[in-house]
Length: 256
Image (cartoon, rainbow, N blue to C red; front, side, top):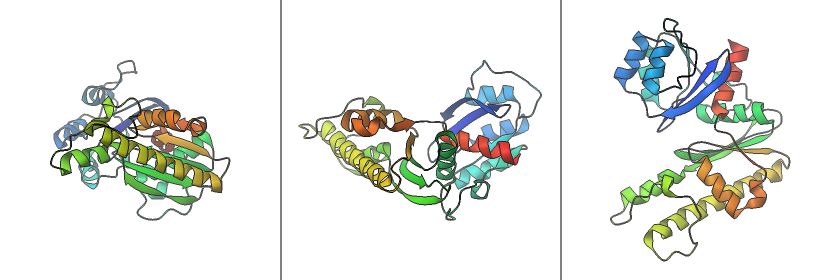
């Protein structure tokens, strides 16, 4: 799955997810290398897959591929054993044509894994909400800048504000900060948490027994903040970073 800033991979063995991880987008030369030698051994080397998987050096590896980055989609067309997943492959009702394939796969994977209805909160480059009812019909959702994007925009688009890294943020800042670093954290984090809480409560107003599933690159830090700020919501929050692969695996299993 090619996201806005990262390539997310899942290794399936006998249609069971065996390992997963992420890396930066691959260059054209690396993709060409994989296309010329599409073996598991080569994949292990290129994207640092775990070494404890069966090695079949001469067996070509099929690639089940989805992308929200058109330039990356074009580069990967040279891979000889490529199957491109599109919205037409996702068995949800009511999808609109510009719905991101990552959102569709994630909410489908959440429903398959945790049950319908479900609301998925994806904490990637963009923070998205995507909800599906118990009839597997898309209700809708929302898109806003994610945690890292909000922080980087302040660091890059202002004259004196510093650029903060999400990896260094482990605990809630004081709400009324007395220095610039904590003031940025306070403004971004508390506003983001309040927005997440509002969307969750609005969704539960429609579907009181629905699952809420959080996924994506900032799911760990944001779920930790939610536990600190809204423990009553946190007790019902599921964190699952394999939703997209569960969606892909389900589609592959029944449409192979």
